Length: 274
Length: 301
Image 1 (cartoon, rainbow over the protein chains, first blue to last red):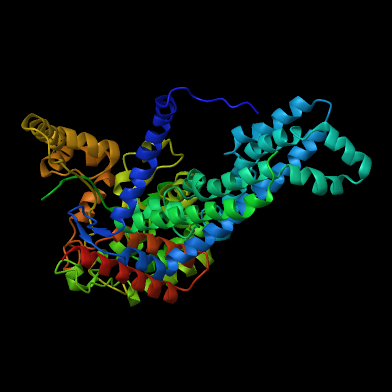
Image 2: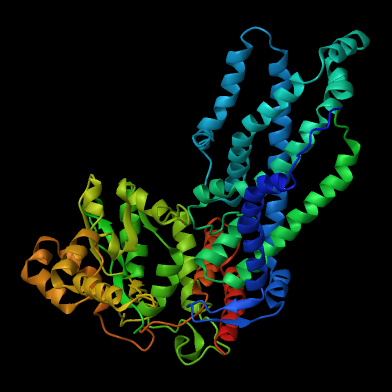
Protein backbone atom coordinates (compact mmCIF):
# COMPACT_ATOMS: atom_id res chain seq x y z
CA UNK A 1 0.00 0.00 0.00
CA UNK A 2 1.25 3.45 -0.88
CA UNK A 3 1.57 5.93 1.95
CA UNK A 4 0.47 9.42 1.10
CA UNK A 5 1.39 12.09 3.61
CA UNK A 6 1.51 15.80 4.19
CA UNK A 7 4.82 17.53 3.96
CA UNK A 8 3.83 20.45 6.14
CA UNK A 9 2.51 19.88 9.65
CA UNK A 10 0.08 22.78 9.70
CA UNK A 11 -1.77 21.75 6.56
CA UNK A 12 -3.71 18.77 8.03
CA UNK A 13 -4.58 20.86 11.07
CA UNK A 14 -5.80 23.68 8.87
CA UNK A 15 -7.95 21.30 6.86
CA UNK A 16 -9.47 19.87 10.01
CA UNK A 17 -10.27 23.24 11.59
CA UNK A 18 -13.63 23.92 9.85
CA UNK A 19 -15.01 20.53 10.85
CA UNK A 20 -13.72 20.83 14.41
CA UNK A 21 -15.23 24.29 14.69
CA UNK A 22 -18.60 23.00 13.55
CA UNK A 23 -18.45 20.18 16.08
CA UNK A 24 -17.47 22.56 18.85
CA UNK A 25 -20.10 25.20 18.07
CA UNK A 26 -23.00 22.95 17.20
CA UNK A 27 -22.33 19.94 19.44
CA UNK A 28 -20.05 20.54 22.41
CA UNK A 29 -21.17 24.04 23.28
CA UNK A 30 -24.92 23.29 23.30
CA UNK A 31 -24.26 20.01 25.09
CA UNK A 32 -22.37 21.81 27.85
CA UNK A 33 -25.19 24.35 28.03
CA UNK A 34 -27.77 21.59 28.37
CA UNK A 35 -25.86 19.97 31.21
CA UNK A 36 -25.54 23.34 32.95
CA UNK A 37 -29.20 24.37 32.69
CA UNK A 38 -30.38 20.90 33.70
CA UNK A 39 -29.07 21.73 37.17
CA UNK A 40 -31.32 24.79 37.45
CA UNK A 41 -35.03 25.39 37.73
CA UNK A 42 -36.20 28.30 35.61
CA UNK A 43 -39.11 30.48 36.57
CA UNK A 44 -41.82 29.80 33.99
CA UNK A 45 -42.51 33.53 33.66
CA UNK A 46 -38.85 34.19 32.86
CA UNK A 47 -37.79 36.00 36.04
CA UNK A 48 -34.65 34.01 36.77
CA UNK A 49 -33.55 30.60 37.88
CA UNK A 50 -32.69 28.75 41.06
CA UNK A 51 -30.05 26.08 41.56
CA UNK A 52 -31.89 22.78 41.65
CA UNK A 53 -29.07 20.22 41.87
CA UNK A 54 -30.03 16.80 40.63
CA UNK A 55 -33.74 17.40 41.30
CA UNK A 56 -34.63 17.67 37.61
CA UNK A 57 -33.17 14.18 37.14
CA UNK A 58 -34.84 12.64 40.19
CA UNK A 59 -38.14 14.19 39.04
CA UNK A 60 -37.70 12.41 35.71
CA UNK A 61 -36.84 9.12 37.35
CA UNK A 62 -39.96 9.34 39.51
CA UNK A 63 -42.26 10.40 36.70
CA UNK A 64 -44.52 7.59 35.52
CA UNK A 65 -45.49 9.78 32.58
CA UNK A 66 -41.87 10.14 31.44
CA UNK A 67 -41.31 6.39 31.74
CA UNK A 68 -44.39 5.78 29.62
CA UNK A 69 -43.06 8.06 26.89
CA UNK A 70 -39.71 6.24 27.22
CA UNK A 71 -41.34 2.84 26.74
CA UNK A 72 -43.22 4.07 23.70
CA UNK A 73 -39.98 5.49 22.23
CA UNK A 74 -38.24 2.14 22.73
CA UNK A 75 -40.98 0.14 21.01
CA UNK A 76 -41.29 2.75 18.28
CA UNK A 77 -37.52 2.70 17.61
CA UNK A 78 -37.38 -1.10 17.50
CA UNK A 79 -40.32 -1.35 15.11
CA UNK A 80 -39.21 1.44 12.78
CA UNK A 81 -35.61 0.19 12.64
CA UNK A 82 -36.60 -3.43 12.12
CA UNK A 83 -39.15 -2.79 9.39
CA UNK A 84 -37.11 -0.12 7.59
CA UNK A 85 -34.08 -2.38 7.42
CA UNK A 86 -35.79 -5.66 6.58
CA UNK A 87 -38.14 -4.24 3.96
CA UNK A 88 -35.34 -2.30 2.28
CA UNK A 89 -33.07 -5.35 2.26
CA UNK A 90 -35.80 -7.51 0.78
CA UNK A 91 -36.54 -4.96 -1.93
CA UNK A 92 -32.85 -4.46 -2.69
CA UNK A 93 -32.19 -8.20 -3.03
CA UNK A 94 -35.20 -8.56 -5.32
CA UNK A 95 -34.32 -5.46 -7.36
CA UNK A 96 -30.75 -6.68 -7.71
CA UNK A 97 -32.04 -9.85 -9.30
CA UNK A 98 -33.95 -7.98 -11.97
CA UNK A 99 -31.99 -7.68 -15.17
CA UNK A 100 -34.40 -6.18 -17.69
CA UNK A 101 -35.67 -2.66 -16.98
CA UNK A 102 -33.60 -2.61 -13.84
CA UNK A 103 -32.94 1.12 -13.91
CA UNK A 104 -36.59 2.13 -14.23
CA UNK A 105 -37.55 -0.27 -11.52
CA UNK A 106 -34.96 1.01 -9.09
CA UNK A 107 -35.87 4.63 -9.72
CA UNK A 108 -39.50 3.83 -9.01
CA UNK A 109 -38.54 2.29 -5.69
CA UNK A 110 -36.64 5.41 -4.68
CA UNK A 111 -39.55 7.64 -5.63
CA UNK A 112 -41.35 6.60 -2.49
CA UNK A 113 -39.09 8.95 -0.58
CA UNK A 114 -40.49 11.95 -2.36
CA UNK A 115 -44.13 11.05 -1.80
CA UNK A 116 -43.96 10.11 1.88
CA UNK A 117 -46.65 12.43 3.27
CA UNK A 118 -49.61 11.13 1.22
CA UNK A 119 -49.03 7.68 2.68
CA UNK A 120 -51.28 8.67 5.56
CA UNK A 121 -54.08 8.85 3.02
CA UNK A 122 -53.74 5.18 2.18
CA UNK A 123 -54.67 4.19 5.68
CA UNK A 124 -58.09 2.60 5.92
CA UNK A 125 -61.23 4.62 6.61
CA UNK A 126 -61.86 3.24 10.08
CA UNK A 127 -58.64 4.77 11.24
CA UNK A 128 -58.95 7.35 14.01
CA UNK A 129 -55.78 9.34 13.54
CA UNK A 130 -55.14 11.75 16.39
CA UNK A 131 -58.04 10.37 18.42
CA UNK A 132 -57.13 6.77 19.21
CA UNK A 133 -53.69 6.14 20.78
CA UNK A 134 -52.98 2.85 18.98
CA UNK A 135 -54.17 4.12 15.61
CA UNK A 136 -51.93 7.16 15.84
CA UNK A 137 -49.00 4.99 16.97
CA UNK A 138 -49.48 2.63 14.01
CA UNK A 139 -49.63 5.56 11.60
CA UNK A 140 -46.43 7.01 13.08
CA UNK A 141 -44.55 3.73 12.60
CA UNK A 142 -45.95 3.24 9.11
CA UNK A 143 -45.06 6.70 7.84
CA UNK A 144 -41.60 6.61 9.48
CA UNK A 145 -40.83 3.24 7.85
CA UNK A 146 -42.20 4.42 4.52
CA UNK A 147 -39.90 7.42 4.56
CA UNK A 148 -36.78 5.49 5.54
CA UNK A 149 -37.07 2.40 3.29
CA UNK A 150 -35.88 4.15 0.09
CA UNK A 151 -32.77 5.51 1.82
CA UNK A 152 -31.88 2.07 3.13
CA UNK A 153 -32.70 0.58 -0.25
CA UNK A 154 -30.07 2.65 -2.04
CA UNK A 155 -27.40 1.64 0.47
CA UNK A 156 -28.30 -2.04 0.36
CA UNK A 157 -28.43 -2.07 -3.42
CA UNK A 158 -24.97 -0.57 -3.74
CA UNK A 159 -23.77 -2.95 -1.04
CA UNK A 160 -25.10 -5.87 -3.07
CA UNK A 161 -23.44 -4.63 -6.20
CA UNK A 162 -20.13 -4.46 -4.39
CA UNK A 163 -20.20 -8.23 -3.80
CA UNK A 164 -17.74 -9.74 -6.33
CA UNK A 165 -19.32 -11.65 -9.16
CA UNK A 166 -16.94 -14.55 -8.65
CA UNK A 167 -18.16 -15.07 -5.10
CA UNK A 168 -21.76 -15.11 -6.26
CA UNK A 169 -21.07 -17.53 -9.06
CA UNK A 170 -19.20 -19.85 -6.73
CA UNK A 171 -22.13 -19.77 -4.33
CA UNK A 172 -24.51 -20.51 -7.15
CA UNK A 173 -22.58 -23.67 -8.04
CA UNK A 174 -22.40 -24.80 -4.41
CA UNK A 175 -26.00 -24.25 -3.45
CA UNK A 176 -29.18 -24.11 -5.50
CA UNK A 177 -31.38 -22.60 -2.82
CA UNK A 178 -31.66 -18.81 -3.11
CA UNK A 179 -32.66 -18.48 0.56
CA UNK A 180 -29.59 -20.41 1.77
CA UNK A 181 -27.31 -18.44 -0.56
CA UNK A 182 -28.74 -15.23 0.91
CA UNK A 183 -28.14 -16.22 4.55
CA UNK A 184 -24.74 -17.90 3.99
CA UNK A 185 -23.14 -15.56 1.50
CA UNK A 186 -25.03 -12.34 0.79
CA UNK A 187 -26.10 -11.53 4.35
CA UNK A 188 -22.60 -11.69 5.92
CA UNK A 189 -21.13 -9.75 3.02
CA UNK A 190 -23.77 -7.07 3.50
CA UNK A 191 -22.93 -6.81 7.20
CA UNK A 192 -20.83 -3.65 6.82
CA UNK A 193 -23.69 -1.83 5.12
CA UNK A 194 -26.15 -3.33 7.58
CA UNK A 195 -24.18 -2.17 10.59
CA UNK A 196 -23.85 1.33 9.26
CA UNK A 197 -27.57 1.45 8.48
CA UNK A 198 -28.47 0.07 11.90
CA UNK A 199 -26.85 3.05 13.60
CA UNK A 200 -28.35 5.49 11.10
CA UNK A 201 -31.82 4.00 11.50
CA UNK A 202 -31.80 3.98 15.28
CA UNK A 203 -30.78 7.64 15.29
CA UNK A 204 -33.42 8.33 12.65
CA UNK A 205 -36.17 6.70 14.73
CA UNK A 206 -35.08 8.47 17.89
CA UNK A 207 -34.56 11.96 16.51
CA UNK A 208 -35.40 12.52 12.84
CA UNK A 209 -38.99 11.34 13.21
CA UNK A 210 -39.71 14.58 15.08
CA UNK A 211 -41.29 16.14 11.99
CA UNK A 212 -43.57 13.17 11.38
CA UNK A 213 -44.74 13.20 14.99
CA UNK A 214 -45.28 16.95 14.94
CA UNK A 215 -47.34 16.68 11.76
CA UNK A 216 -49.51 13.97 13.26
CA UNK A 217 -50.17 15.50 16.66
CA UNK A 218 -50.21 19.10 15.37
CA UNK A 219 -48.32 20.40 18.38
CA UNK A 220 -50.93 19.09 20.84
CA UNK A 221 -50.02 15.50 21.79
CA UNK A 222 -53.04 15.15 24.11
CA UNK A 223 -53.68 11.44 24.54
CA UNK A 224 -51.57 10.56 21.48
CA UNK A 225 -48.15 8.92 21.67
CA UNK A 226 -44.97 10.96 21.46
CA UNK A 227 -41.28 10.17 21.56
CA UNK A 228 -38.72 11.40 24.07
CA UNK A 229 -37.33 14.04 21.77
CA UNK A 230 -40.81 15.43 21.16
CA UNK A 231 -41.33 15.66 24.90
CA UNK A 232 -38.13 17.70 25.19
CA UNK A 233 -39.72 20.18 22.78
CA UNK A 234 -43.15 20.19 24.41
CA UNK A 235 -41.83 20.76 27.95
CA UNK A 236 -39.01 23.12 27.07
CA UNK A 237 -40.14 25.30 24.21
CA UNK A 238 -43.87 25.30 24.87
CA UNK A 239 -44.02 24.72 28.62
CA UNK A 240 -41.03 26.95 29.48
CA UNK A 241 -39.56 24.32 31.82
CA UNK A 242 -36.05 24.77 30.46
CA UNK A 243 -34.31 22.95 33.33
CA UNK A 244 -36.50 19.86 33.16
CA UNK A 245 -36.31 19.83 29.40
CA UNK A 246 -32.51 20.14 29.46
CA UNK A 247 -32.34 17.21 31.87
CA UNK A 248 -34.39 15.21 29.37
CA UNK A 249 -32.01 16.06 26.54
CA UNK A 250 -29.00 15.12 28.68
CA UNK A 251 -30.67 11.75 29.32
CA UNK A 252 -31.10 11.32 25.58
CA UNK A 253 -27.48 12.30 24.97
CA UNK A 254 -26.21 9.72 27.46
CA UNK A 255 -28.53 7.12 25.92
CA UNK A 256 -27.17 7.71 22.42
CA UNK A 257 -23.61 7.70 23.72
CA UNK A 258 -24.15 4.36 25.46
CA UNK A 259 -25.85 2.93 22.41
CA UNK A 260 -23.02 3.94 20.12
CA UNK A 261 -20.35 2.53 22.42
CA UNK A 262 -22.33 -0.69 22.72
CA UNK A 263 -22.76 -0.98 18.97
CA UNK A 264 -19.12 -0.41 18.17
CA UNK A 265 -17.81 -2.63 20.97
CA UNK A 266 -20.11 -5.58 20.53
CA UNK A 267 -21.44 -5.64 17.04
CA UNK A 268 -18.57 -4.27 15.08
CA UNK A 269 -16.24 -6.98 16.29
CA UNK A 270 -18.18 -9.57 14.37
CA UNK A 271 -17.99 -7.66 11.14
CA UNK A 272 -15.16 -7.90 8.67
CA UNK A 273 -14.47 -4.96 6.47
CA UNK A 274 -13.10 -5.95 3.11
CA UNK B 1 -48.35 45.73 34.33
CA UNK B 2 -45.44 44.12 32.62
CA UNK B 3 -46.97 43.40 29.22
CA UNK B 4 -49.44 45.20 27.05
CA UNK B 5 -52.57 43.03 26.64
CA UNK B 6 -53.15 42.51 22.98
CA UNK B 7 -55.04 39.53 21.61
CA UNK B 8 -57.97 38.95 23.91
CA UNK B 9 -60.81 36.49 23.57
CA UNK B 10 -63.15 34.22 25.45
CA UNK B 11 -64.89 30.99 24.50
CA UNK B 12 -68.39 31.39 23.09
CA UNK B 13 -70.99 29.11 21.55
CA UNK B 14 -71.31 29.17 17.76
CA UNK B 15 -74.27 27.60 16.02
CA UNK B 16 -75.45 26.79 12.54
CA UNK B 17 -78.60 28.89 12.02
CA UNK B 18 -80.11 26.62 9.35
CA UNK B 19 -79.53 23.55 11.51
CA UNK B 20 -81.33 25.01 14.52
CA UNK B 21 -84.20 26.21 12.29
CA UNK B 22 -84.50 22.80 10.69
CA UNK B 23 -84.58 21.16 14.11
CA UNK B 24 -87.00 23.78 15.41
CA UNK B 25 -84.83 24.79 18.35
CA UNK B 26 -82.96 27.86 19.52
CA UNK B 27 -79.44 28.01 20.90
CA UNK B 28 -79.58 26.43 24.39
CA UNK B 29 -79.10 28.65 27.43
CA UNK B 30 -78.37 25.81 29.83
CA UNK B 31 -76.70 22.43 29.55
CA UNK B 32 -79.93 20.87 30.77
CA UNK B 33 -81.80 22.43 27.84
CA UNK B 34 -79.09 21.18 25.48
CA UNK B 35 -79.35 17.68 26.86
CA UNK B 36 -83.10 17.27 26.87
CA UNK B 37 -84.31 19.55 24.04
CA UNK B 38 -81.64 20.87 21.67
CA UNK B 39 -79.45 17.83 21.14
CA UNK B 40 -82.21 15.25 20.48
CA UNK B 41 -83.90 17.62 18.00
CA UNK B 42 -80.62 18.31 16.18
CA UNK B 43 -79.89 14.59 16.05
CA UNK B 44 -83.28 13.93 14.47
CA UNK B 45 -82.52 16.69 11.97
CA UNK B 46 -79.37 14.79 10.98
CA UNK B 47 -76.66 16.70 12.85
CA UNK B 48 -74.11 15.92 15.50
CA UNK B 49 -75.26 18.47 18.03
CA UNK B 50 -71.98 19.50 19.63
CA UNK B 51 -68.22 19.64 19.19
CA UNK B 52 -65.69 21.76 20.97
CA UNK B 53 -62.09 22.87 20.70
CA UNK B 54 -59.58 22.89 23.56
CA UNK B 55 -61.27 20.78 26.23
CA UNK B 56 -59.21 22.11 29.18
CA UNK B 57 -60.01 25.69 28.18
CA UNK B 58 -63.78 25.41 27.95
CA UNK B 59 -64.63 22.33 30.00
CA UNK B 60 -62.49 23.22 33.01
CA UNK B 61 -61.02 26.73 33.01
CA UNK B 62 -64.08 28.62 31.79
CA UNK B 63 -66.38 26.03 33.31
CA UNK B 64 -65.19 27.16 36.73
CA UNK B 65 -65.52 30.87 35.97
CA UNK B 66 -68.98 30.54 34.41
CA UNK B 67 -70.17 28.61 37.48
CA UNK B 68 -68.07 30.66 39.90
CA UNK B 69 -66.22 27.62 41.27
CA UNK B 70 -62.64 27.86 42.59
CA UNK B 71 -59.95 26.72 40.13
CA UNK B 72 -57.19 26.38 42.71
CA UNK B 73 -56.60 26.77 46.43
CA UNK B 74 -54.86 29.85 47.88
CA UNK B 75 -57.42 32.15 46.24
CA UNK B 76 -56.82 30.62 42.79
CA UNK B 77 -53.07 30.86 43.34
CA UNK B 78 -53.00 34.63 43.93
CA UNK B 79 -52.27 34.41 47.66
CA UNK B 80 -49.15 32.29 47.35
CA UNK B 81 -47.60 29.33 45.66
CA UNK B 82 -46.87 27.19 48.70
CA UNK B 83 -49.17 24.15 48.73
CA UNK B 84 -51.42 25.41 45.94
CA UNK B 85 -53.62 22.65 44.54
CA UNK B 86 -55.96 22.61 41.56
CA UNK B 87 -59.61 22.14 42.39
CA UNK B 88 -60.83 20.68 39.13
CA UNK B 89 -61.37 17.34 40.81
CA UNK B 90 -64.80 18.50 41.98
CA UNK B 91 -68.29 17.09 41.75
CA UNK B 92 -69.64 19.59 39.20
CA UNK B 93 -66.90 19.07 36.60
CA UNK B 94 -66.90 15.31 37.02
CA UNK B 95 -70.68 15.22 36.62
CA UNK B 96 -70.21 17.35 33.51
CA UNK B 97 -67.71 14.90 32.01
CA UNK B 98 -69.94 11.96 32.88
CA UNK B 99 -72.72 13.76 30.99
CA UNK B 100 -70.41 14.43 28.03
CA UNK B 101 -69.52 10.74 27.72
CA UNK B 102 -73.21 9.96 27.79
CA UNK B 103 -73.86 12.55 25.05
CA UNK B 104 -71.08 10.90 23.07
CA UNK B 105 -72.82 7.52 23.34
CA UNK B 106 -76.18 9.06 22.45
CA UNK B 107 -74.71 10.71 19.36
CA UNK B 108 -75.11 14.27 20.68
CA UNK B 109 -71.43 15.02 20.99
CA UNK B 110 -68.39 14.03 19.00
CA UNK B 111 -64.73 14.49 19.76
CA UNK B 112 -62.40 14.79 16.76
CA UNK B 113 -59.01 15.17 18.44
CA UNK B 114 -56.89 17.44 20.58
CA UNK B 115 -55.88 19.88 17.84
CA UNK B 116 -57.84 23.10 17.60
CA UNK B 117 -59.04 22.72 14.00
CA UNK B 118 -59.92 19.03 14.44
CA UNK B 119 -63.16 20.12 16.04
CA UNK B 120 -63.73 23.37 14.14
CA UNK B 121 -63.62 21.73 10.70
CA UNK B 122 -66.70 19.47 11.20
CA UNK B 123 -68.68 22.60 12.19
CA UNK B 124 -67.49 24.44 9.08
CA UNK B 125 -68.46 21.44 6.97
CA UNK B 126 -71.99 21.59 8.40
CA UNK B 127 -71.79 18.18 10.10
CA UNK B 128 -71.83 19.60 13.59
CA UNK B 129 -74.55 22.11 14.53
CA UNK B 130 -73.00 23.72 17.63
CA UNK B 131 -69.33 24.43 18.16
CA UNK B 132 -67.77 25.85 21.28
CA UNK B 133 -64.81 27.90 20.20
CA UNK B 134 -63.03 31.20 20.62
CA UNK B 135 -64.62 34.58 20.06
CA UNK B 136 -61.35 35.15 18.21
CA UNK B 137 -62.57 32.87 15.41
CA UNK B 138 -65.45 35.19 14.58
CA UNK B 139 -63.60 37.29 12.02
CA UNK B 140 -62.17 34.27 10.23
CA UNK B 141 -65.34 32.19 9.81
CA UNK B 142 -67.13 34.39 7.21
CA UNK B 143 -63.99 34.23 5.03
CA UNK B 144 -64.31 30.46 4.84
CA UNK B 145 -67.28 30.57 2.48
CA UNK B 146 -69.53 28.46 4.69
CA UNK B 147 -72.61 26.87 3.17
CA UNK B 148 -74.75 28.09 6.08
CA UNK B 149 -75.26 31.18 8.25
CA UNK B 150 -73.76 31.08 11.68
CA UNK B 151 -74.41 33.00 14.83
CA UNK B 152 -73.07 32.92 18.37
CA UNK B 153 -74.19 33.32 21.94
CA UNK B 154 -73.04 32.82 25.55
CA UNK B 155 -71.54 29.57 26.79
CA UNK B 156 -74.32 27.45 28.32
CA UNK B 157 -74.18 26.58 32.03
CA UNK B 158 -75.57 23.88 34.29
CA UNK B 159 -78.63 25.10 36.10
CA UNK B 160 -78.05 22.35 38.65
CA UNK B 161 -74.73 23.99 39.57
CA UNK B 162 -75.70 27.66 39.50
CA UNK B 163 -78.69 29.80 38.69
CA UNK B 164 -76.54 32.92 38.51
CA UNK B 165 -73.97 32.28 35.78
CA UNK B 166 -70.98 34.62 35.78
CA UNK B 167 -68.58 36.03 33.21
CA UNK B 168 -65.88 33.89 31.59
CA UNK B 169 -62.13 34.36 31.79
CA UNK B 170 -60.40 36.57 29.29
CA UNK B 171 -57.64 34.78 27.47
CA UNK B 172 -55.02 35.81 25.00
CA UNK B 173 -51.53 37.19 24.82
CA UNK B 174 -49.59 40.30 25.66
CA UNK B 175 -46.86 42.21 23.93
CA UNK B 176 -43.63 42.66 25.83
CA UNK B 177 -41.03 45.33 25.23
CA UNK B 178 -37.59 43.85 25.75
CA UNK B 179 -34.92 45.50 27.87
CA UNK B 180 -31.51 46.43 26.57
CA UNK B 181 -32.43 48.72 23.71
CA UNK B 182 -31.40 52.32 23.33
CA UNK B 183 -33.74 55.27 23.86
CA UNK B 184 -34.56 55.71 20.17
CA UNK B 185 -35.58 52.11 19.79
CA UNK B 186 -37.67 52.25 22.96
CA UNK B 187 -39.39 55.32 21.59
CA UNK B 188 -40.19 53.46 18.39
CA UNK B 189 -41.60 50.55 20.42
CA UNK B 190 -43.80 52.92 22.41
CA UNK B 191 -45.02 54.56 19.20
CA UNK B 192 -45.87 51.15 17.80
CA UNK B 193 -47.82 50.24 20.95
CA UNK B 194 -49.66 53.53 20.67
CA UNK B 195 -50.52 52.75 17.08
CA UNK B 196 -51.82 49.31 18.05
CA UNK B 197 -54.07 50.71 20.79
CA UNK B 198 -55.56 53.49 18.61
CA UNK B 199 -59.35 53.02 18.29
CA UNK B 200 -59.11 52.74 14.49
CA UNK B 201 -56.48 49.99 14.68
CA UNK B 202 -58.34 48.13 17.40
CA UNK B 203 -61.65 48.34 15.56
CA UNK B 204 -60.03 47.03 12.39
CA UNK B 205 -58.38 44.20 14.35
CA UNK B 206 -61.67 43.36 16.11
CA UNK B 207 -63.54 43.12 12.80
CA UNK B 208 -60.87 41.14 10.97
CA UNK B 209 -60.12 38.57 13.67
CA UNK B 210 -62.99 38.56 16.14
CA UNK B 211 -60.71 39.23 19.11
CA UNK B 212 -62.29 41.69 21.51
CA UNK B 213 -61.07 45.30 21.29
CA UNK B 214 -58.75 46.18 24.16
CA UNK B 215 -59.99 49.73 24.67
CA UNK B 216 -63.41 51.16 25.48
CA UNK B 217 -62.88 53.75 22.76
CA UNK B 218 -62.59 51.06 20.08
CA UNK B 219 -65.74 49.35 21.40
CA UNK B 220 -67.63 52.67 21.27
CA UNK B 221 -66.37 53.25 17.76
CA UNK B 222 -67.67 49.82 16.66
CA UNK B 223 -71.06 50.56 18.23
CA UNK B 224 -71.27 54.02 16.64
CA UNK B 225 -70.37 52.54 13.28
CA UNK B 226 -73.28 50.11 13.56
CA UNK B 227 -71.05 47.03 13.39
CA UNK B 228 -73.14 45.14 15.94
CA UNK B 229 -76.35 45.96 14.07
CA UNK B 230 -74.84 44.31 11.02
CA UNK B 231 -73.22 41.45 12.94
CA UNK B 232 -74.88 41.15 16.38
CA UNK B 233 -72.94 38.02 17.29
CA UNK B 234 -69.65 39.91 17.03
CA UNK B 235 -70.51 41.54 20.35
CA UNK B 236 -71.06 38.25 22.22
CA UNK B 237 -67.46 37.93 23.39
CA UNK B 238 -67.47 41.43 24.88
CA UNK B 239 -70.90 41.01 26.43
CA UNK B 240 -70.00 37.68 27.99
CA UNK B 241 -66.84 39.17 29.46
CA UNK B 242 -68.98 41.98 30.89
CA UNK B 243 -71.37 39.64 32.73
CA UNK B 244 -71.46 39.82 36.55
CA UNK B 245 -68.16 39.21 38.31
CA UNK B 246 -67.75 36.41 40.87
CA UNK B 247 -64.97 35.86 43.39
CA UNK B 248 -63.57 33.12 41.13
CA UNK B 249 -63.78 34.87 37.77
CA UNK B 250 -60.81 37.21 38.21
CA UNK B 251 -58.26 34.80 36.83
CA UNK B 252 -55.74 32.47 38.44
CA UNK B 253 -52.02 32.24 38.97
CA UNK B 254 -50.49 28.84 38.32
CA UNK B 255 -46.97 28.26 37.07
CA UNK B 256 -46.33 25.50 34.54
CA UNK B 257 -50.02 25.76 33.64
CA UNK B 258 -49.13 24.75 30.07
CA UNK B 259 -48.00 21.36 31.37
CA UNK B 260 -51.08 21.09 33.58
CA UNK B 261 -53.14 21.73 30.46
CA UNK B 262 -51.18 19.00 28.64
CA UNK B 263 -52.08 16.60 31.45
CA UNK B 264 -55.75 17.58 31.16
CA UNK B 265 -55.68 17.23 27.37
CA UNK B 266 -54.21 13.77 27.71
CA UNK B 267 -56.65 12.63 30.38
CA UNK B 268 -59.71 14.10 28.63
CA UNK B 269 -58.68 12.38 25.41
CA UNK B 270 -58.41 9.13 27.33
CA UNK B 271 -61.86 9.60 28.83
CA UNK B 272 -63.39 10.27 25.42
CA UNK B 273 -61.72 7.24 23.82
CA UNK B 274 -62.86 5.04 26.69
CA UNK B 275 -59.34 4.34 27.96
CA UNK B 276 -60.05 5.54 31.47
CA UNK B 277 -62.87 6.56 33.77
CA UNK B 278 -63.82 10.09 34.79
CA UNK B 279 -62.94 9.31 38.41
CA UNK B 280 -59.43 7.93 37.68
CA UNK B 281 -58.63 10.63 35.21
CA UNK B 282 -59.45 13.51 37.57
CA UNK B 283 -57.46 11.85 40.34
CA UNK B 284 -54.47 11.68 37.94
CA UNK B 285 -54.91 15.34 36.99
CA UNK B 286 -54.95 16.37 40.63
CA UNK B 287 -51.76 14.45 41.46
CA UNK B 288 -49.78 15.54 38.40
CA UNK B 289 -50.95 19.15 38.63
CA UNK B 290 -49.97 19.25 42.28
CA UNK B 291 -46.45 18.04 41.44
CA UNK B 292 -46.12 20.79 38.80
CA UNK B 293 -47.43 23.48 41.15
CA UNK B 294 -45.06 22.32 43.87
CA UNK B 295 -42.22 22.67 41.39
CA UNK B 296 -43.47 26.16 40.54
CA UNK B 297 -43.50 27.03 44.26
CA UNK B 298 -39.79 26.20 44.37
CA UNK B 299 -39.05 28.81 41.68
CA UNK B 300 -40.72 31.53 43.74
CA UNK B 301 -38.43 31.47 46.78
